[in-house]
Every structure is written in structure tokens, then in C-alpha cells.
Length: 504
Image (cartoon, rainbow, N blue to C red; front, side, top):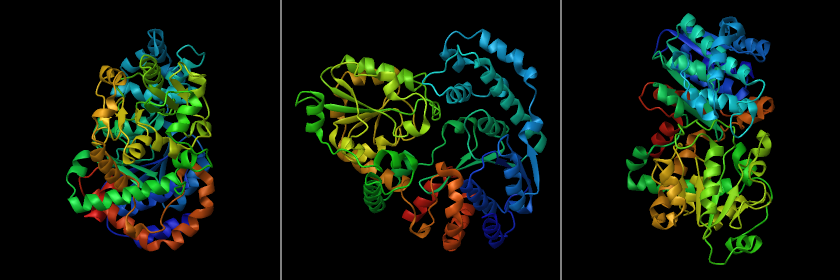
């Protein structure tokens, strides 16, 4: 595969539009990532400048060989720059000693201004719980790991002195610390992520950009569309979602949500099975995976997803006029760890129920009167089906005009006590959500069959990658040319850039 990637770079041996040093995050060994890196390097012409690969603590020998085969001659190793645990132990002990509640973590003042939210989420990911447990025996070790990562990243960026940094992620201790060390210095930083079979690159130029990492069309971009363009995109969005609901898309969320046989249902069956009145409105509450970085988009109304769930259940219990369906995240079994069923158990009140695993997710969306969530993709799907949506906090689509965004905790909880869905103009939100879905889930026509497997398949991707590269040379060349234009413009989100260019 590496030979094919080198051949792609050779076809695009153009002078670099920028000069200086490119620091390349090579801490995540994934075939799709190496492909995305190849297209980014070709677009930047970076091989004509100094390139430095950063090798992490996992699969070091394999990554070193990959960098060599990609003609990235210079590399540094994360471990070389890491302080010893004893260097951070006292600072960690001070932080832990003054801690009284998990919420206190969010108020920590950390070295170099590193966001405490990233530390909270990183510990949560390690513990695989719904709320950070500050009482575990290894809690201080997690804090030490965070401080070590922060210092290590600072030392690397200071030593390499890059003019541009490419990162695979901007979350957790290590990846987040690398992105933070670069962005806070004003170093141009690009997150080269992928979703739905394509490149979802994001430019990080300000510290707050680390809490805005999704490639989606913003509200102002939707507003600026000509009526005919918007109508075409809405039709494309409708078709994209039909394919998604039928299990025909390959992303991990859709595979688990819609890819398996399921029990058909409608509103009457829901009410009958749960013993609810025939006239009772039914609202779905779509949960997140509890430890999958709750502060990823700047959550501020709640401590974490557990805080949101507990507050939502309390409000639902106090509104018995409504039937509330608690829907687990479709990837809970894949993630492992604590699940919605673990946290809720049996229904907490006669009007609150867990959605059975066997129920059809597509039928559920079509059957409910409204949907409540924090930032589930289900909100896009529901709104495009004509369903009112209430979101409890900042997310990624919260300001895009097809959901009701509660801008405070009180506003959200007050809404749950009312028939909030009745005030939403669903004709407007349905069209808006479909336009959004056309841009977000869509692909330009020239991309053709150049669609990568989901990143979660990891090493299995190596089996399909050679044929993908060999059969899609024209599309790959077009991708690189489009990336080159994107790097030269101020737009932050690459997929949105290329979709809007195609739609114009």
C-alpha cells in the first residue's frame, strides 16, 4: 500500500506554496489516516520542505517503517521528550488533594492554559464510566499522565519549531496537547479526520477551535444558498437519509443503528407495548456514549452526559403527560463500558421507558412526536423527517436553524415541562435539515467510488485499500487539487468547502 501512496505523491510533485517545517502527527497507525496524510502532503507540496514525523508510544516500529516508506526522512519520538513521572507528581498531588467533586476538575488551572475539559474527558475515557470517579486508586496516575502529555507536547513543538502541524485527532491528553501546543503559539494546524468515507479536514487557528471539530455547513452558509441550489441539496439530503435508514451506508454509527434486522413499529404499537394512553405524546431522548468526550463541542450547561441524563429524567418524571423513550447510543456495545441500561435500569416512572434493542431505529424516528438530545446525529435525521428537535447544550449543528437550542440549563429544563414541540415550524426545519444533510452526508459527483472504509475497521482496511487506490486515480487527483485550493482559502471545513463548490 505504501508504494501506491508514494506513487500518488509522485504524480503531484509540485512546488510547495508554503515554506518551513511540517510536523506530522504519526501517533495513530491507521491506513485511512496514511491516505489522508498523503493527500494533504501532496496538496501542500510539503515534501519539498522539512517534514518531521512524531512517533507516539504505540506501534513505534511499524510507524517508523511507514514514515520511511512515505519518504518522511526525519522523525522524533514522544517518549524522548516526556518528563519523568516524578517531575509532575507533586503538581498532580496538589490538584488531587484540593478536589472535592468531579465538577472541580473543570475549574483546574493547568500548565500553559491547557483546557481542563480535555483532562476531564481524557480521564473519563480511561475509566469508561459516565462521570469521572475521583475516588479510584489510580486517579492520581491519570492526572500525572495528563500533565506529562501537556509538557511533552510543549517540548516537542518548542524543539521542532514547526510552521504547520498536521494532527490525526485533537482530543484526549496526547493528541489534544499537541494541537493545543501548536494552536496557542499561532502555528497553522490542520486536523485531517475522516467520516462517511471521505476527508473531513478542519483548520485550527484559535484555541477555541479545539471545541469545534466537526466538518458541517454553518447556518450562515445555509442562509447564503440560492433557492434552486438549496432545493437540489434538500433532495440530495432526503436521498442520503433514505440510504442511511436502509442500512446502505458504511459509517459505524449507521451500521449499528440501521444495519441489522429490527422489529417494525409505529406510534400505536409503542403506546400499546408500554401501556401508555392513546393520546399521550411520545418524545425520544437520544443518549450519547457516556465517556466519548462530552466536552468535544464546548458543553457548558451540564457537567457531562450523566448530569444531562439525570436532569432530563427528573424533568420527565415531573411531566407525566408525555411518554419519554430513552434511546441508548447505537455503538454502546462496540464501545464497551457503562451503558444506558446500567444507569437507568427499569423505567424510572410509568411514563419513562428504555427503547428495546430490537426496535427499528428508523421506525422509531418516524413514530415519535419529538426528539431530545445533546448532539446526536439522530437530531439531523429526525428533523429531516419533520420531527421537532430540542438540544440541551452546544453541539455542532445547534445554531444551524433546524433544532431548538436551549442556551442554558434552566431554559432546557423549563422546555421539558411544556409541549415545546408545538411551537416549531416543522415545514421550515424539515427543509433546512434536508439541505444540511445534503451537504453533510453527501459527496460530490466526481468522487465516484473513492469512498474509504470506516476508520474503526483499522488493520482490515489494508485489504481493500490497494484496489481503492488503483481504481480511483482520477478522483484522488481531483481531491488533491481541491485540497490545494482549500488550503489557500480561509474556509475552515474542507468537506463543506468542496460540497458548496460542487453545488454552486
